[in-house]
Image 1: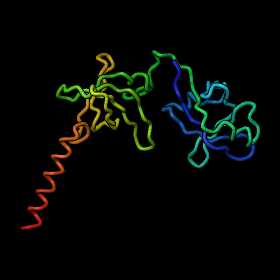
Image 2 (image 1 turned 135 degrees about the vertical axis):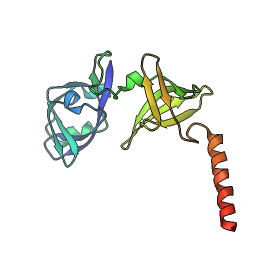
Image 3 (image 1 turned 120 degrees about the vertical axis):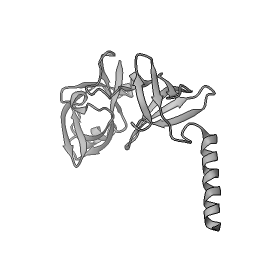
Image 4 (image 1 turned 45 degrees about the horizontal axis):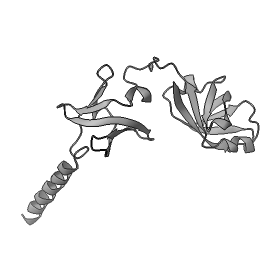
Length: 189
């Protein structure tokens, strides 16, 4: 199974190093010197990591055969893809690979069906489940402990405790309306 582990950013310096946007919780394993990675677009690779270092909080990589800034810049926006065993599990108990979460059914703690996870969006502050509802619309659910109460891989479901308005637009409108009428009463007193 293939897993996107990073996206190449801009060139750094003149000796072929590039910045990378890490997309794995295990960069020391997936982006170590000697690792051979497939690429998207495929014509850019495969790439073998020659060196890696952290500079000012950013991971810098140099690939075999990439020796100057021009060659490094040509790799910009290339995705780096590692081949992993589909049965491999992350080191931490509460961590999951994207492929484990895709297609899980999402239900509330009360058993109300919300939809199915179709994609995971990795943002700087948190990850989001992109959930397709039965009517074809999508809802974004932050993958945070306060909202995602349980991931049950055996039952193929994610149990959530959504705050008002996260999955039910009408509930959000009702809550806003209640808040406006309550604040109006407070202003007139």
